[in-house]
Length: 155
Picture 1 (cartoon, helix red, strand yellow):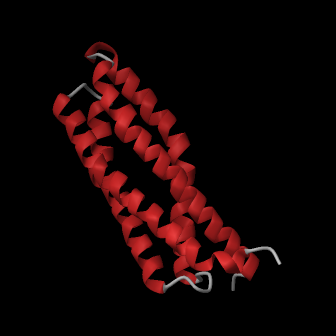
Picture 2: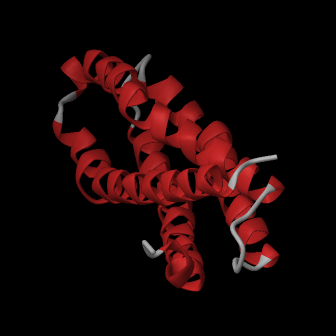
C-alpha cells in the first residue's frame, strides 16, 4: 500500500505533469502547428522528421508520468478527492491518448513522408481534441487540489 507521503508525491507529480502538458499543447495548437505551413514544401519532410523526433523527448516523459500517476490515483487517491473526479480525469486522459494514437500520429506519419496540406489541416483541427481534454483535466486537477489543500499544509 502507498504511504500518505508517497500519495502526496504521486498527486503533486500528477498535477505538475498535467499542467506541463497543458502549456505544451496550447503552444503547439496556437503557435507551432499553424506555422508548419510556413516551412515550405521543399524542406518540410526534414523539418517534420526532426520535429517529431525532438518533440517525443519533450512530451514523452510528462505524458508517461501523467498516465502512471493517473492509474496510481485510481488505485489510491488522496483523502477528500471524490472518486468520480479521478475517473473523469482518467477518461479525459484516455481520450487524449486515443486522439494521439488514432488522429495525430497518423497525420505526423504522413507528413514525415511528404508535405500534404489536407493532413496538416487535419492535424491542426483534430489537435483541438487534445487541447480541450487537457484543459478540462487542468481544471479538474486544480479542483482536486482545492479539495485537499488544507490536508497538505505543513503542520
